[in-house]
Length: 235
Image (tube, rainbow, N blue to C red; front, side, top):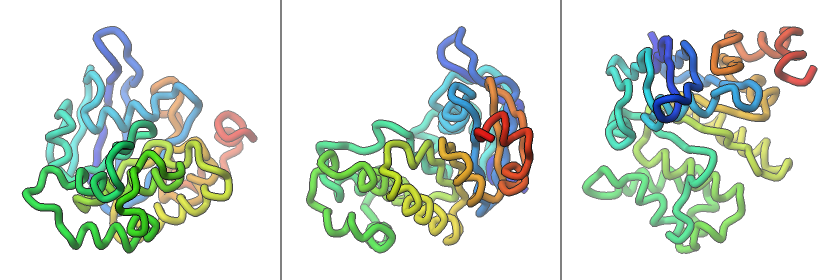
């Protein structure tokens, strides 16, 4: 049974710019799924479409047996999805703590246990609670963005290029933290430019090209596929 089921999805921006053409994506409860492919393949558009940020042109999106097709983000968040976009994913003028509190804005009160869980997972955020988020390093900002998305304890966490812009020595640490989130029971759907590393860690992977599904299999199977390696992973 799929926690997230994207079926024959057509989506884009405005009336005339269609990016996705009949895309299918599945994520099971607790599964770790990665979407890879060349620039312009529509990877980020899949994530935005699930979260209601694109123009729906056809197909369906179902989450936990609820049809969320075309549902706006302010309603999607109630269904148990967390989304961390690649850019503009923090409030730079707010403090670290204020950013985290914004992650629970739909609740009457900020749950202290959720804050404690985020601080336990990302100790640097605990140390920097009063610091303005925009003055933190890129890696710390990415941790903050993930921490904010975890404040509502989502069943599925969607991550768009979490390693983008990070120094090479921080990339492995970021992936390790994502592994830990998944190990604790949160399903992951991730778009990632570092395709080889992502496929090594995930349960299953999808390869998109020109807005369409090209390959789907277990991550290590895709890594071992010579055609996939030559066409999409740089040999």
